[in-house]
Image (cartoon, rainbow, N blue to C red):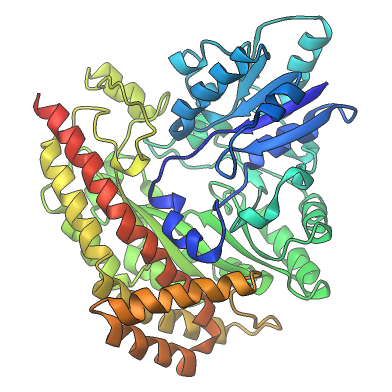
Length: 519
């Protein structure tokens, strides 16, 4: 069997980082970890070919070579997924589809032409699919029916199928699931509330594989809450630190975690000592009433400002997500988010408008209240900008206006430069206070391509913009006084090249949707 593994295109969003990746000579932020995990579950005798269409289109030779197409997609990839399915059918190929989109919305119009739907987690449903193929079954829907697999049985993903040179980060998973029950989150729907973790030796085997394949640099542990099972994380980190040391620190790590990380000093120190550099927090809003209404209770137990400061003090750079549009939200929420971000200095702060995701508690509640809205453009117009999902309690034009104003204020070149500088100074102090034998800065792993990117950065921000004098002043200060975070500082400046260009398309998307609302 020759299997063509297809990964659809992502639209340009906050997290696509197109403008920054261009400077680094990379095409995509992250590889399709789910799809290469599926590949590892397929029979060894099968021939596999992966096409990430964010890197290159599917060729006529690919279609002609294949006996079967397997695709995986998220909600934001749904339109391009539908195009790939149609193309496969035009080439008379059977198509199997899985991933979060198919799992959460198996009745979606985009999936109608698919022959097989492989839902839920592949460790359970891929074997069901394979048995159906052996029986000669031409169609099928395969579900786990509430069963959750033991991730300790999950194989090492087929990292060898990836064209590594095109990715900015590598992706690895340690756990699935989250113990919390935020109303708007679909993670607990997809993976449950009991975090399941791999064994430390199992994860290190994946790192060994990546090391042998030549990957050096940053790895994103894509767990939706890396510290959901703190006991097992604390078992992992000392072993990971030892592995890093004997391999001369080839990797640095980024992950996502809940805010209670700030209350566990032992955990923060262990993460920093093992090579973790950045952590994404779902802060959502500084408004306590909104947090309580959406059941984000873990963010109400301790002051949010202090949590950001505490995590930074251990050398972990805080990235954060914020949301507008919660029930009970009052006017000025966007300004309060901007003030919080400026006060804490968080450089990379994603602000979005609330979306009710299928089968979440929020979706169910809004459906009962008759507030869900149907829209023809689906979810892939950029998650952070989608307006036409449900009837909000305050006027949507007001929320949208605050959203655009907040983004403009946060990524104004002068404001952003100053915030990044202040934060990197604090981050430098945090990294210096953590005693460790790994003192490398950001591992760029890009050589001459990086030099080109830095040259473009200096041209745009150091010569063309009105902030050019501030750019050089802060760069000199970071280089001479805070050299440990120089790489991180330059990366954050590159990110604003994306945010500046993204802002124009984002504004256009929001205004078009507001026009639809007015008709």
